[in-house]
Image 1: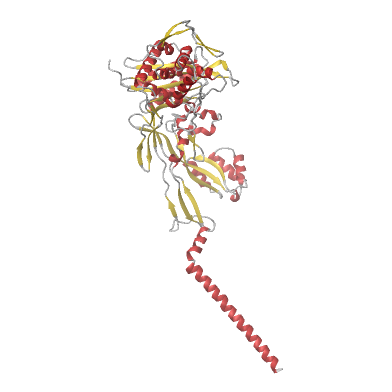
Image 2: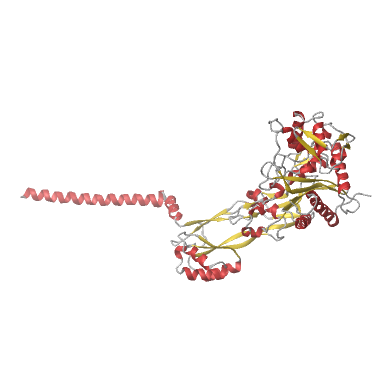
Length: 583
C-alpha cells in the first residue's frame, strides 16, 4: 500500500512539472514571437497591417494644351476643363428609387436608367460624366450613401470646330482618338502620379499623415501647331461654301508652305464638333480625307510626268511632236477629253490643254518612243522615290494611308496599259497630303520636305522648335522646277484666271478623276475633281490642293474644285499680309 501511494505522488509531481514546463515553453514561444514581431520583423508586419488600410489613387497628369499660331502669337484651340464624374456602389444604396429620382433631377437623363444602374450587381457604376462644379455641389448635398464624386479633366475647344480633323478628340477614357490627339497621345498625356492614403476600418480616408506618399504627375507636352488660324478659317469657310454650292459628297483642302513643309491649313467638310464626339452617329465624319482617303487623282499627275521626262532628258521645253488625237497601247485606245484633231503639239500644250495622249507620249519618250520595262521602271522610281508616293509622308496625324503604285514588272495583265494610264493619273492612288508635298517639291526648286503640323512643343519643360526635315534635295533640278512652275502659270492663265490683285503669281493644274464601280470598270455618273498649284508674291508662299468628291453641278468636276481653289487664294491675298512682287 505504501509503495502505491509513493508512485501515485510521483506521477502527480511529474504531471505538474510537465505542465509547468509546458507553460514556460508556451510563454517562451510567445515572447520569442513577440520579439520577432515587435523588434526583428516590426517593419514587415507593420507594412502588412498598413496595406489593409492603404488606398492607392492615381493622380492624372494635366494633358498638354494645343494652340495654333497666327504668325505673331499662339491661340489655344484645345484646353482642359475641370468636370466631375458621379459614381456609385450599389451595395450601399438603401432606397434606389428615391436615389435615382434625386440624382436625375441634378444630372439629367432618365430616372429609370439611373435606377437600373443603382440596382446593378457591380460594385462600381458610373451614373453621370462631365457634370460641372455647381452640379457636383448639388450631388454632394444630397448625401446619398454609396454615391461619390470624382474630379476629372475634359477637353474644351474655345475656338469651336476649327481644325477639328487635324486635332481629333479625347475619349471618355482620356485617350486621344483621330488626328493629332491620337498620333501624339503619349506626349500629350504625360505621366500620372500616385497618392497613397491611409483609411480607417470602414475605408474612410484619414487626415494626411507621414504614411501618405504622393508622386507628383508629370504634365503632358504643350504643343503649338504649324496651322495659321487665320488661314485655317479661310480654307474652312471657302471649302464649306464650295461643297454646299456644288452639292459635293465631301471636300478637302491642304495648304502647305513649300519652303519648309509646314501645313498652314488643312480642312475637310462635312466636319464635326470635337466636344460632342459621342453624339456623332456617322463615324466616317471623323476621317481626315486629306491624309486617310486615297484616290485616283487624274490629270494633276501630268506635271509630274512632264518633270520626269524633262529631268531624264527625254524631252526639252522646246520639244514638239505630232499628236494624232489618240494613242494605241496594246488593245486600248487613249483619247483626250477635248478633241483637238491631229496636229503638232508642244510640251507646254500637254499641260495647258491637258492632253492624255501627250502624257502617254512623255511616258513613251522615257523608253525611246515606246513604253518599255526601262520607261516603266523610271516612272516608278520617280513616283515612289522622288515624289514619295506609295508610302506615308510621316505627318503627325493618325491613320495616314500610303496609297498605291503598281510595280513596273510585267505581270502579264496589261502592265503597259496600266503605266500609260498612270501617266495621266489613273491606275494609281494617292492622298491630298502626298500630292501637296510632291507639288511643293516640284515648284520650290526640287527639295522634298516632310510635311509637318508641329511648330513647337515642350519636352521636359523645354521648348523645342520643330526643324524642317529634308527627305530629298534632288527631286528635280532647279532648272526643271522653274520650267514646270512656269508651265503651271500658263495653264492657270489659259484655263482659269481668278480675279487676283497685281503683284501675285499663281500656277496650277486641274484633274478630273474617274471613279471605280468596284467591278473593274469606271463609273459614268460621277467624278472627283481636284486643283493643285502654288501662290507666289515676293516669294513662293503656298502650295494648295483642293479636292471635291462627286460634285453634282454641271461641267467638269475639276472646274468646281478650281473655283474653290481660286476663292481661297483670293481671300488669302486680300486678308493676309503677303508681300507682293515689286512691280
